[in-house]
Length: 385
Ligand code: PLP
Image (cartoon, rainbow, N blue to C red; front, side, top):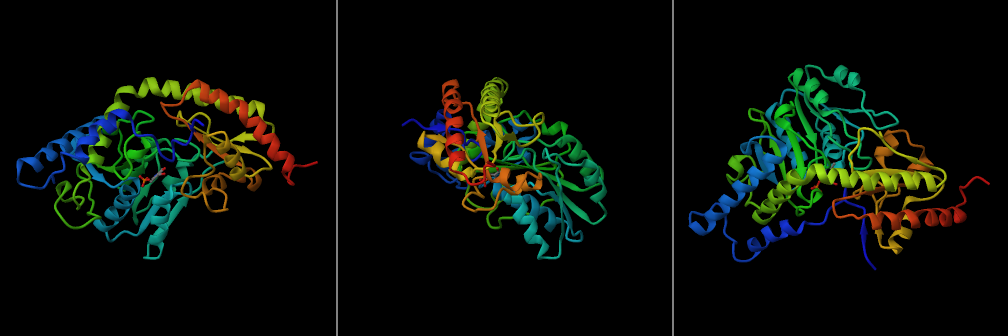
């Protein structure tokens, strides 16, 4: 059975072109970039090229890119590194809908004397910028707000948020793990200080990411040890991963406009058909300000997990809540923050598409979904009689 993969916000297929660039680095080209010999020294050039490719996608200087082990490390570094560089301030502002890589890291800081404000969102998952502005005070050291939500795809007004925070001399970090490669960014025109990204969300490999650090931003290193990454992140570089991330960024930069159009067309076709053909369902999240690849739909009276299992029988991969929270019976914290009723939050499914999806895959899913929903509702004790 063919796999139909609509779970690209969890992870993506590594592009063939990326794999090709990485392959020799697992075999004949295995030198350590820190070595004095020419064999290792070649790796330094490869890393330099990857840094340029990442910087070019983001619209920043290569020297502003620090390679990490992924989105989680970038987020943790941004938070911990900012606090360590400004030890006299004790307040952090974030949102209720962040990924656990930010939310759990911030909540942990409450045990260490920090005040953490988690901003609310409205029913569509949007922030109230006046509330953000009110919360920023002299004790605020960091505002960390995601660029795009992994569960609903809602995109926050990043330029305005960055301006509000940095206008009050507060460091601003954004977790852009879901935005990079999916929507065009130009950091040089924004006032973002720190930005996290992750290779495996944009057809690069897992276990590699980057943190953009605006020139002049005060940030203490999080990983301590060797002098790699100009003393900003210790540890022997993941050369194949870094090279793969660079290539993935180059591909994204080249094709983003065309791919966005294709992916959005397929997403909209799927979404419109499901909302039309399945009774008692609703779209979660702001329809306008959204990633082009994501749709999150709640099907009333049934469990998301049951829908996923039925989809799986047809080879269709989707998700309920984020990959990290699946396995728990709690409905998604993002949907709860948006005030989605308990019954609807439980029956929510996220489809997240990529450049590799086809019209046939969408048509097949449109055909199967109403069948699945009707079958599960026949068995559900929650359907009103
Ligand atoms: N931030 C967001 C918004 C994410 O969606 C994810 C992954 O799901 C992460 C951070 C963590 O990234 P990584 O898996 O590279 O650690």
